[in-house]
Structure formats: structure tokens, C-alpha cells
Length: 148
Image 1 (cartoon, rainbow, N blue to C red):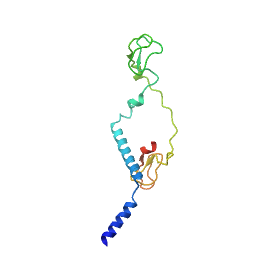
Image 2: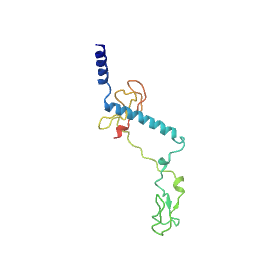
Image 3: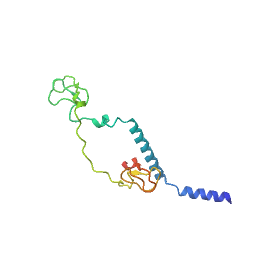
Image 4: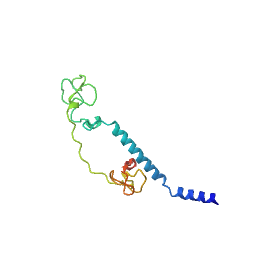
């Protein structure tokens, strides 16, 4: 009888556990947090922008040595006007990149009802930013499934 009661209790706990989708969301949130921490550990100092953020679109990276009009590009090549080999343009690296336009904030849930930030402890609900969980107080983590 004790064995039967123990098995019954285990089945009840297993049935009341989180669904596969909930587990997937939690695992994705945990992995996202690990990825963010790794990114922060490997990032440049605060006064330096990452190379990808500093891409300059107003100045050509490679230019014609004869300054032909309409020539220049993002990679090495030849000038279509005079057939000279492009040379590296140092101004590409010293000219500030254009400012990134501001965007409107994303909604806290996507069209499928998936939260943008969820609790890493698996609490129900979520939010649109990394605020404290309403249930346990842990900081919410980014949910990559929100963007799928």
C-alpha cells in the first residue's frame, strides 16, 4: 500500500510540473542569460564601440587613388573609370559613423503571446524589460523565443 501511495504522489507531482513548452522557454531564457554574460565578459571597454557598431556608411572603405567620381567601395577592387586598383581609405576608420535612428520599444508580448523577458526560476508571466519578477523578485532574463 505504501508503494502504491508513493507512486501515486510521484505521478501527481509529475503531472503538475511544467509543460515541455514552459521548460523550453525557461531553458532558452537561461541560455540567453549565459550568452549575455559571456558577451559582457568579452566586450570592449565602455569608451570603445564594438567594430560592428562603428561601421561607417558615409565614407567608402576603399577608394580610387585618382579620386575618380563614382568610384570606391566596401572591398578591394578596381576603379570602373580608370581601372586603377582601389587603395585603403583611412578616413573610413576616423570619420564618425552616422547616428543610429531611434526605434519604438517592442511590446512585452509578441503576437503569439510569448513574453520578451521571463523569469529564470520559471515563474508565470513576464515583462517587456529586465525588471524584477512579480512572484519571486529575480531579475527577468531575455527570452530569445520572443523573436521567433
